[in-house]
Length: 202
Image (cartoon, rainbow, N blue to C red; front, side, top):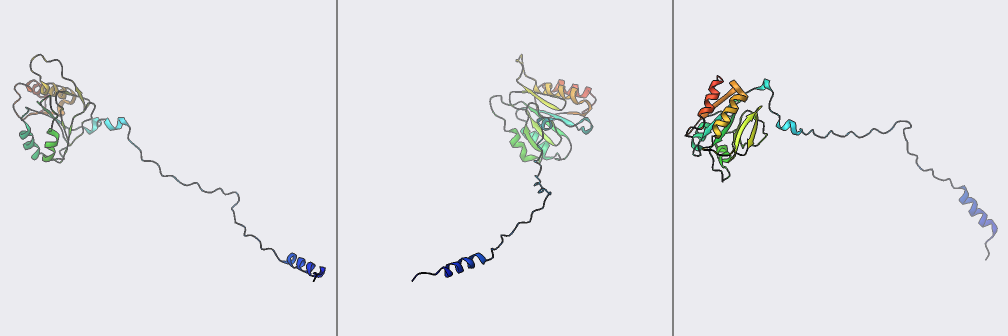
């Protein structure tokens, strides 16, 4: 049976008459740009100058130079067992160490004080409530509260590392310099102590 034209037109009109569903329109704010995301500022790293700069002159504190022979560990431990860790003084230890071996002095002294005990390094600023130990086979001086470490000068007789440091400490710190000899070092330290006493200090 053939389909009549009436049926076809009716179907076409039915499709044509269906209402189309409108797509939802997103609301946008015209003329108002989106707020940028705020980034947290990166933490500021101190520059190399800030890391090694010594305290200002207004923040002065005493610096104690301490001399001892290679067998002075017992004298040092006895001293630091009785020294408060918040005295606002710095301690620099000049010891006659074996030039051919690494020093265990910093590690051993850490057991007897709450202060930081470290091996001195060239260009290191001296700060209070810290203990610095001279490295083996090095000469140590101080200038502007900054440690200066170098190879020992050519030997013409006995080395005098304690004298050398005490003299530089007297010149650099004046009345804030303190010297202590804890155990036998021969004559090493004698001239340096005179230089410190000449500055009118301990």
